[in-house]
Image (cartoon, rainbow, N blue to C red; front, side, top):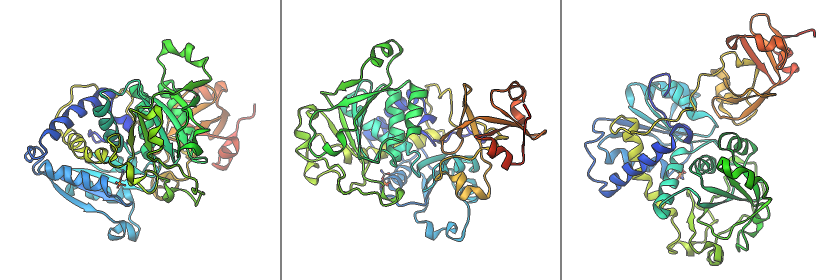
Length: 447
Ligand code: CP
């Protein structure tokens, strides 16, 4: 719940596992007859603010709202908006998410932008993809499709292939797979491995353990397979057993999730040997019952002659985006209710107002880009063991704080000093280093 008393979907963590399952059942109802719901959201207006290209996300949201009986206003190209004249995201959503629209869907190139939109708009905000951060509604569509195909998510063996570094769909999908108890096999193209901050979050929040994975011969993916890792959110009673394993043999694959190289988010890294899924890949014994998934758009990662293979479900993922997004919007607009409990730890949390000393280490974070003009950098404390770990309230990237200053006395202490522990939370200013504190005008405590 945000400060405006509304519900946003910025991260897949904003929905509990039980809520997601309940939304699947609502999506089933919508899907049974897409034409039967034109009174449900009559009178509601959705605005799509897309500052990056999109086909599926924007059009499926617009289709969903029209099928629910509502109206749509859209900014599909940033050049046609006042952003081209320098208007901030915060000002745009204040205006559009005021009297213009009842719900916003926002796509933006900077990590953490959706959280900014949620903070400044008075109406629910849905993240349609923010930089390399998250794409939670794609994950809802992916999970829903896989759940329909396999009848469950727990215990599935899901191979993630290609660009795992810059793909926001992968990041949201990983968090959700771990939460649902699916096992993840990562097969990144070299240089495009799952980022350390995603792995850290998987370890911290889901107790995910990593081992080397052996997936046998998957022709076309071989360039990636030597880096394969097996990630599993083991149940506590399995942990002791699992930590003894150094290699997991994966003989049955339930899904191969392929991604394109996100060229718009990296600086010309060589992708000439990028993996390519072919009929030959899908001839391997381990893939007999595997589903081929892709968030689309496809470039060259999946051969077109796999399209009519019954195991290929990438167009189904896009198709099910409509009933899934109908269910989500009907819920956020208060037109359907969920019985399930909300997540205990919503990702919208009050920032540490005095966290001004820290700077997010993610250069793509909105706090280091357009937000420099108007955002206060905010962090939440996620681990109080030594050293302190905080995460950026916008993009979620973690940072270690080794020094704590007093906002009144402007004296800075090592984080584990007795004086530091006595500073009230509201007076604390966190720093990564003493140099950072001195540069902010603080004086080092003479110990
Ligand atoms: N999967 C996805 O986000 O597609 P678009 O970029 O076309 O919206």
